[in-house]
Image (cartoon, rainbow, N blue to C red; front, side, top):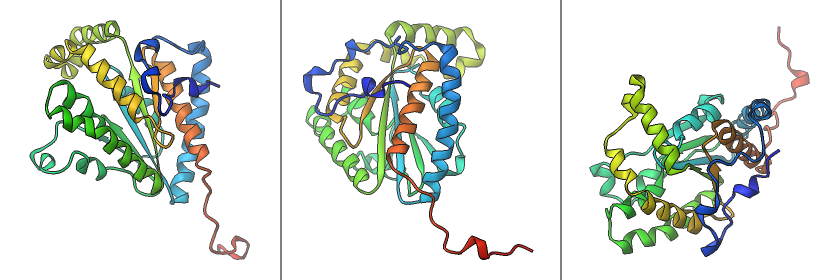
Length: 270
């Protein structure tokens, strides 16, 4: 099994945390040949734990994915969360806020999609966009986005106190890997719909986004809502690591099937 703590951003990491020391090409000395059967076992365990979470109906799980473009958010969600029962899972992709959403605080639209009891909610991008793109593109004053780190921490603490476990994944890729993925989208007509020329302008801000991500991960990785830096250039390893963290998180919740309110031995089915 992987040592998932190796990829977890320590709470109160301060200036010690640097994205540059995390290798996006890392695969934990695991081979793809060994990873495939491990992943299958984890998914089977994940499916069982999700059923127990749904049946227990006292707590919930929020899973957040963030990445640079081409980081593999959609693919990870499809491979890791795809096999579980969709009845107990929701996926929300956050785009640019609407006029109505802009009329409220930045967390208003987020809170509406947090999971109810027994549910797993997955965020493809999230409230962290408000300290990432909002910061890099100067969409709000510096004072505004700086205050949001503490507001995010308070929001996630509230969720935890109310029974929602929060786990967050930053899918880590290099600028060179992103270039390769963008070129492949251009080469394949079936992938053209995924290519947006505006992404090239965002790519020029790579360094700014790395600094923004680094500060967000450093300031908002807490005991109750940890960040994990997931090396994402080997998809099989990325999926394995995310699956193991989710299984470990659900196990740590000490879930139980509810006790029957009747005596099964006295039930007669004719």
